[in-house]
Length: 416
Ligand SMILES: Nc1ncnc2c1ncn2[C@@H]1O[C@H](COP(=O)(O)OP(=O)(O)OP(=O)(O)O)[C@@H](O)[C@H]1O
Image (tube, rainbow, N blue to C red; front, top):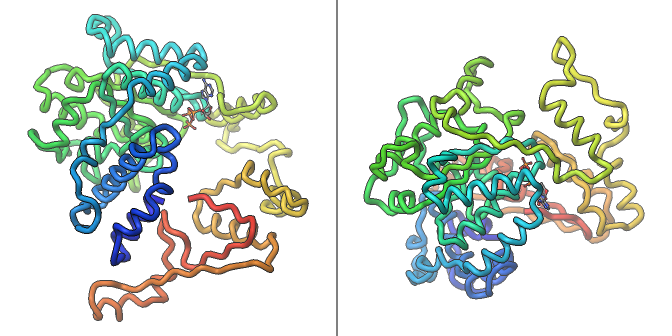
């Protein structure tokens, strides 16, 4: 909802955005309200909206009727150490032994400078999908904050960053340029608010690190050394990277396989500083899915490929009939709507997602169908309106926005 509100602010010029905020601020804070009091949840939600605006080079000051009270800013760092401690301790108590080991090591190093000499300050969690990396980041985030440490969580893509508590992109946190080259530098200047934040941060947590080109890591090292004036790796800050090299590596347009591989953080001179922790258990898999989890891991490690790099799926993985029918048909026919959200179809292409969504909605009762259409027009002058036709705008399907024509029937599941 906050994303939608920000889109409305930026693109729809609402006459009274403050009224919208007042009316929907509780709904927009519902996620924070799970962990914080109503007042703090609303303030955090407001701060988050300011951050989303900043990500798009806008400022809340561009919307003068919205509350401009600076105490909202001061409250950004409002945290409740007792609450953090309770969550952190609970999560730590249910961590598996490998997770416990990482959590304890990072806490020890963050709280004891002598331990930094023994253990170093750079760590990498190597774990396949579902092995509980994010669980570790969240536990550490709560525990470290309860100990008065400042933690910054980040990831190379926005989608990965939103899974982390107060996660931001590496670009935002470190002022990385786009694209990044070997001689690129951060845009963060000394004596700015961003620089101060970095200097004050004790622990950086960086998820999906294998996706980032090694230059990002190198820029971070140079930046933190410059800002802290401490000639130690990353200015002496604790850095916890995590990810899975079996998943996405950095992408270089038209790059050869070896060019892409050599962009990996593993090929950075800094990689030798990182102490690796391995996670093995798939915490996402149910007891009856252990075999499947193992099979997925074997695929990731290339063990299932034949000599030509092809692989054959076991027959039980293949749906020969209609996929949407296979997954949702029986549930919908038997009116088991509360079970529908337990299943999902993943697809690599948005166009296929739209097709599949359409097909599933068409299985539902058509008698109460509603179609919602967007109203699109170019805002910058008449000349532009002629060039950019409404039909063209209607055909665009940008991420984070519903399609131009949204068709809903009763019991349609919506995820935003
Ligand atoms: N120790 C634990 N106790 C209870 N649940 C856990 C534990 N560790 C992980 N989980 C749960 O297992 C699931 C997968 O964990 P998590 O998302 O942390 O894995 P991940 O390694 O970050 O996965 P991915 O690489 O796909 O992002 C989550 O639902 C998480 O809450």
